[in-house]
Image (cartoon, rainbow, N blue to C red; front, side, top):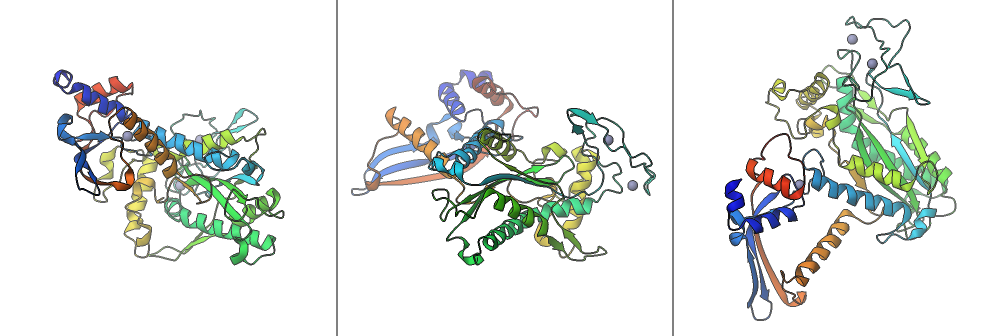
Length: 447
Ligand SMILES: [Zn+2]
Ligand SMILES: [Zn+2]
Ligand SMILES: [Zn+2]
């Protein structure tokens, strides 16, 4: 720390750290950017990292995972919030008239894979977890009843009443098939709406666009639920109104139908019968209104929050697991450890290879994206990012850091190589002081 603070280039180092806005694991790049006059070939401007502290440029890691880098995930969260909100009330290129389009917030759940400890509330009162008056013992000798009124942070929440009865195979396969189930749901929804409008499916897009933004949320038991904003637009997206027959009621009815009928089959494999997976019976469909129960801020906040979370709440790891590793060394709780072990076991079963369960064992089988939007939902994260970069670039030009060139006539040659990431322990402490961020519990990122 003393060496860093006394270094002659400390100010430039500190400026780099400030520019990463508290990133916990900045990416190190080595390289150069050269601007040439396209006509004469004359070198107009050169930037190289050779004169930077340690000969590198540090850039934010831009992860979405709050567990890996809270600062970068916060940027992703607020971008997601802005674009979900734009799809509900307009803005960022979406007209305000979108508020009049039929829009629902739907939650598609996973089925049960065995009784787990839960916190249940009714009218503000906490109810007993699984009170069964004459519950019988399971084949493993456990009585399948729990009369505890669990507190919200009770560590047993989400854990099975009997881990030996719990259907770990089903839980992991459901997560693996959830993206396919979602796709089939979206297809079925379009088919149902076409039927309602008396149109062949192939003509639907000339009349109606189904736009959606969805996010996956892990339940504590380790399965994913999907929350989705589903909106009906005219042809081409939110700028046109949907046809008059495409009402909120018609949408709700089609969502209910599609969620009920779709399924995904896992054929019989090595000593296991075939299994048919469907969404759970719990289906929540609510209208989004500007001043009712469920406001657009609440929905945008909800989706943005889960967009930066993965399966951490289940107690799994936030990085890939080597199938040859000894799981006991990770110090996991029994339930997530069994889910991961089941992923690793099923990964070796012939016929399931395409689910790539070993690669996604740390995600308990789910390999989809946490947060996705259909193309026409609103603006994109890329456009929001580009707008921010344009702004930063204009600032650099006005403060004289970048020369102002006519872009058409300039040849830009850049060359970058990856040179590591993270901080030494000393740098981490100084960086935390500069950016006002918390020092993570694990000291020092690897270089
Ligand atoms: Zn970061
Ligand atoms: Zn319980
Ligand atoms: Zn049992």
